[in-house]
Image (cartoon, rainbow, N blue to C red; front, side):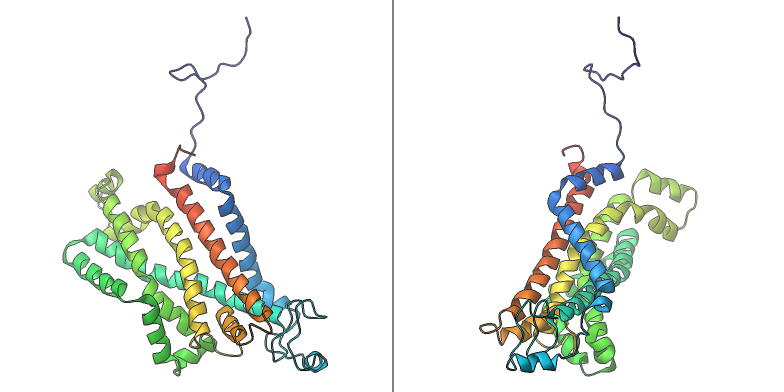
Length: 315
């Protein structure tokens, strides 16, 4: 009779699998999502480009190569020209270097706007869900009013109203974009956090904390919000493409990033004037914007599937 280590058996006589923690289970399912992995890799590359790209760019984003422009008959250099990988615009500025500057702007919007969303949406949603009653009704009616107003129209109104002020000129208009988009994007986060607090406030661990006299703030901050981190991460990731697109739209219509900074939206707007004769002025910034939006969307969808407890054990 063969001897060896005993094997744990289930009720059906089969080896029972080891228990897998929720974090490892979520990571395992995320790894199986190829589109999410591709999106994550591209997102990391974009963040690295935003951090170091302008510093290592072959040209400064506003420097003009007038000699090359005159040698080409005062026409923009085409892609793969000497010293200009993606060519130049009509002013002789290197398009590749300006795309790198645009990546820094888009990734800054992606990060800072979501920080504003968290700073506004999480406290409002947590207070509404925890205290309930009149405070909940007041905060949610205010949230409904902001939610009912068209986001893009509100952002455009803020941009036009403050464009010529100190706020509008700060950081070449980037600070105004942070504020305008952040003030309209927090409502979804507030609703999400409120729903999570309402579902967790009657849990046994919350009742136990109340019984031993833990203060409300500590219960919410140390027990309820950490247990809501999964949906919050998904909401932040899926909210980034909307923020990037909003910034590109503002710059496209001329009330976003101010010259000479180069936003992908402003580059697309500039290139549309010469799209028939110089299509590379539109193709490259539009492609960069599409890649960024698609990557964050793939990553957000993958995180949502991985962190959804209803899907645990199905994949």
